[in-house]
Amino acid sequence: MRTHNRTHTRRAVLGAGLAAAGGGLLAACSDGAGGSASPSAEPAAFVAPDGAEVAAAEAKRGSGPVRSVRLTATRTQLDLGGRTVDTWAYGDRLPGKEVRVTAGDTLALTLANHLPEPTSMHWHGLALRNDMDGVPGVTQRPVQAGASFDYRFAVTHPGTYWFHPHSGVQQDRGLYAPLIVEDPKEPLQYDKEWVVVLDDWVDGVDGSTPDAVLAELSKGMGGMDHDMGGMDHGGGGGGMHHMSMTAARAEKSPSRMLMGATSPLLGGDAGDVAYPYYLVNGRAAADPETFAAKPGDRIRIRFVNAGGDTAFRVALGDHKMTVTHTDGFPVEHAETDALLLGMGERYDVLVEAKDGVFPLTALAEGKKEAALALLRTGGGSAPGASARPRELDGKLLTADRLTADKAVRLRDRSPDRTVTLRLTGSMAKYDWAINGEKYAPSRRLPVAAGERVRLSFVNATTMWHPMHLHGHTFGLAGGGARKDTAIVLPGKRLDVDFDADNPGLWMLHCHNVYHSESGMMTLLGYRK
Image (tube, rainbow, N blue to C red; front, side, top):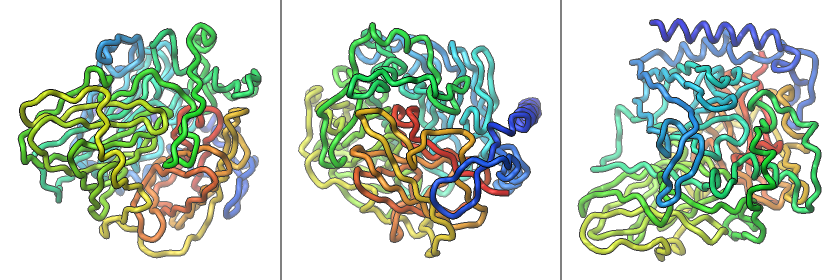
C-alpha cells in the first residue's frame, strides 16, 4: 500500500504542476477536423494527463496482481563483445533486464535516476493511462538526477513491447529493455522462446555520443551551423533536444554522418548515421549470442528494433519464419524468408528448428553491415560475422501485406475525423517537422473520445519515416495489421485508422530519434 499511496502523491504533485503551467504545458489548440492545429488560449479545452477522464479509463481496465520492479538508470561500462564502452544503461546489462508480466496485471515499476541529467521512461506500444506514458513536459515532470519516479498502471493487452527514455537522444545509448506481456490464454504452441533486440551502436566509441551525433547532423549536409538557440530545451526532454555537455565535445569525436546509403526497400535514402556497431541482444557480430535448442523444437522469436536510425532486414539461415504478430497484435499467419523492421517495430515469428548451427542475421538495411546471433541445435562450426543467408534475398514480408487476426481487426467504420500529417524537412537543412512546424508542446491536434480517427501521413521528404503513435494501435487499410509504428516511404501517403478510446495528450512522432529530436513530433489531444 505504501507504493500505491506514494504514486498517488506523485500524481497529485504532477497535477498541481501542470495546472500551474497551464499556459504552457496545457495550452490548447483551436478545434477543427484535420489539418494542423494552431495554439489558442484555452488551456482547459483538453483532457489533462492526470484528469478525471484518464482516471476513469484506468478504473475500467481493472486492477490485477501487482508486479513490482525496480530499475536504475546509471552510467556504466558495457562489453559489446570485444569492445568495452562507457555508456548509460539500466543496471549493468544490455538490453536492460527483461520485464515480464501477464495481461491483467498491474505493473509497479520504480525508476531510480543515477544519471547526470534528467530522464524518463516511455512504454512503447502500450495503451496505458496517460500520466504514466513517460513524456516529460507533457505527461510528467522529468525525473531529475538523483530522484526516482513510480510508474504504476494496468497492463491489459498481451504482446511484445519495450521501454526507453523519451528525453533527448538518450534512447540511442543503452537505455532500453523488452517488456513481454504474456497471454493467460496463449493460443500459440511452442517449446522455447527467444527475445531478440536489434540495435545500432555509437555511444562511447572513440569519443562519440548520441548528443554529438545530433549536434553534427543538426548542421545539415551543407555544413551550415544552424542556430540551435530557438529550440525548447525543456529541462530534459519533453520538447526539443536536451543538450548535455557531451554535445560541446562534438568536434573531438569522429564524423558519424552517413551519406550514400541507399535501399530500394526504403524508397531511397536508408539513414543518416554511420554506426560503428550493430548488435543483437547487446553483442556485436564478432562475438554473437548463441541460443540453444533441440532439433525439431518450435521456437517463438520476438523481434524488437531498438535502433536509433537503422532499419533491419532479418533472416534465419536455412529456415522459414511464420509471422504471428506485429507490434503486439496477432495477424493471420504468413510464411516468409525475411522481415523488415523499422525503428520501434516488433514482430513475433515461429520457426521449427533444424539440426545444426544457423546464423540469425540482421542486415542494417542500406548500410552494408549486419548484426548476428546464432541458433545452435547440434554440432558444427559457427558461421562467422560475414554470414549472409540466402533468405535475406528471398520472400520478404512487410506490414502492408499482413492481415489482422479477426479477433483484433478494426470493425468497418467511416472516419469521424481525418488528421493530415505532412512529413516535411530534409537532410540538407536537418529541419524535420510535421506540417512544416517543429514540435512545440503547446500545439495539439484535437480529437474527441469515441471518434474513429484517420491519420493521413503524407511523406513530402526524400527519406523514410517510421511513425509511432503513443497510447493506441491503429489499423492499416482494408483490415490490415494492427500497429503502433508504421513505415511511411518517401513521396508516399499512408492512411491508418484508430478508435479514440484512451483520453489524454499523446505523442505522435518519427521513431528515428534524430528526426524526432530535430522537430518531427506533435501531440494529439482529447478535447474535454
